[in-house]
Length: 227
Image 1 (cartoon, one colour):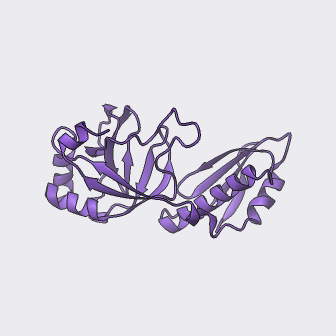
Image 2 (cartoon, one colour):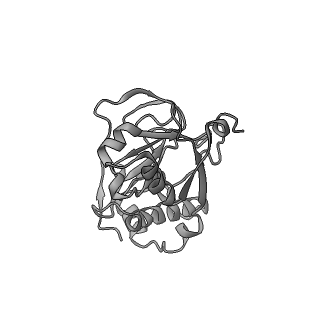
């Protein structure tokens, strides 16, 4: 449940779900996010102009000409959210090639985890990952939770350029670079799928908060010829 609802500037409310980062807490954030979106679509609430979910927080921005902090706080406190987020959850399979040339940081991971490449991949592929949030670059999913034995810090010196589709590990999360970008995650492979489609105005994200993700291995030839 929400621990506290606080002012964040003049026209935003900060909903705090606690300090823990786990699937249960994040599912609550997503439930509130999804429910408010649904109420907006049904025109049952007015004045909310933006919703920003994270691992364990939800920021609600509003139009002061149409509503205020007190009204927004009352709406949030009275929400019934238990079932809606579960109905919208999808299970998505993501192909990834982890062959040389695309798996840039395996030597680093082998040294830090004291595991072989095959052992790291075996643990990585048997997990189902939960999308906590998207952000940093458009549509980039933050997926948890990596097995504790595979958790590593970011690169000491980030790369100036990480290619689109790169799959990286840092701490408890996996992410997928949805476009070329600087970055410091440990890159283990690349997916040929378009995770974010800027031309799709209705649903540009392939992966959304609350979705469950399973990775599977493909060859370099399959990767290069993917349509």
